[in-house]
Length: 31
Image (tube, rainbow, N blue to C red; front, side, top):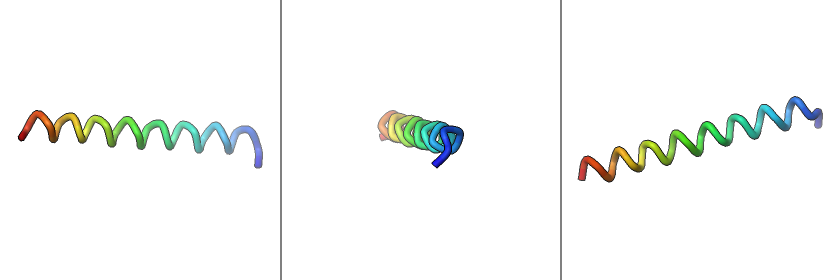
């Protein structure tokens, strides 16, 4: 695996995690 590939995966996972947490926080506010 190339370093660029690993960085891309880390960025993707971080974005996915942030999106997931923001959706959860919005959900908490609604209920």
